[in-house]
Length: 518
Ligand SMILES: Nc1ncnc2c1ncn2[C@@H]1O[C@H](COP(=O)(O)OP(=O)(O)OP(=O)(O)O)[C@@H](O)[C@H]1O
Ligand SMILES: [Mg+2]
Picture 1 (cartoon, rainbow, N blue to C red):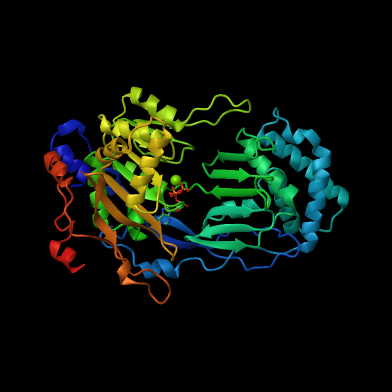
Picture 2 (picture 1 turned 90 degrees about the vertical axis):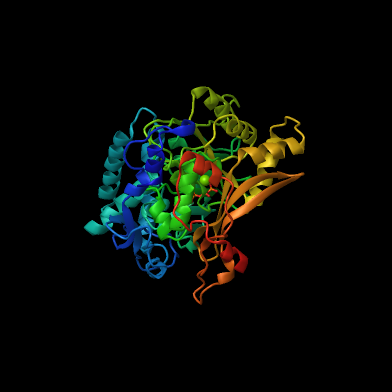
């Protein structure tokens, strides 16, 4: 019986509603890596770009085994990691033709390209028509394949995201970073690589950025030179242009994965151990307030999503985010998204406004996607006043830093509270901090699970219940050999679990002998 079901059997004490059926986590399909050689069709490189052979991409598919208790052999994972860089082919003659075709198309289409009365299909048809007549008119000696490629790339440039299209459809790419027209980096399997993809020049890159931004109803120009937005498919985009971006227009895209990582995936990737996953599920079901802490891109939102999956189905969840990223599976969910000011500088709705508003929405749980400002005060107050079981993330490099950062964020609320009062509020609001780290080998791991014990004099007392064994060192090929392990300390929140009838597997906290050895 899984944890949620066990608690269910104890007949909903302390406001935990009864739950029918199994928790989603145990029913989650298991996955394994398979190689997918259906790499995106090659893209025409800018003249002078290097030619690199097509590569294998990696996708997830559901399979029947293995169980979370026997996580996948990490060496298997490593052996299947992609090794080559971006898919490129060089066809200088064709790319010249493409540039000319694009130019002619812009001339012929004129303002119709930005006509709001034309929907996407009508626009596509129109572009197709004009493009056909340009190619026919030029009597170009193209093979059917070349012609098809030319059409697709002109489409990508005029209607799509140009050279980025190939990277966007490459499943092994998780993040795209464009630092000016000549430098496009991607992240694959946690590692950054410089790709041979190039934009023709700065105006070409600007056109693509403008296209992204106008598609989502925003604008970017000298008066508002930075935009944070979301693509139609949920991918997160940040664009910043000169003069703020000194080295040229800069674009960062965090690709949205339709298949969010599940707890079993995190166990397979050794980000979590099965025991820690069980403990985290107990912490969520037991309504502890949890902060996921980590540096940028360490997997905070992904873990928050996994944790939110442990919330029993019948609870009312209000999620609050800057740009919706969480993929909550429960039925009873209200998703709120903050809004930036409009061009006249009006209409801004902050995360803080939404947190305050959520308190009037009778939430059983409040999930704040990321705590990065004055909303910290309202969130802590909510955690302290009956909205226990709330979850959030914070940017910090260790559990202790996370607490210090929370204090700083509360100070930003400008309430002039004495530091001791703030610290006491943090101490009584937060129960558990889960620390994530992206290690040098590219893996993202939970490196600590820390309990907030309380105050001792002026000091906040924390104790690690799980910690990553860095002492185990690194293998010859640079992989970390350690795991996240129990420290042997028993958390105080175990008392709450006992009251709620939450039972954990024996040995989940290790033994005191282990602790003494350390
Ligand atoms: N445990 C993991 N193992 C491997 N990849 C992961 C893991 N967790 C997340 N990722 C991937 O890492 C990328 C960043 O994840 P995520 O958005 O959760 O990070 P974040 O810490 O919330 O980032 P930010 O600081 O920008 O908000 C995503 O592409 C995600 O799929
Ligand atoms: Mg995030």
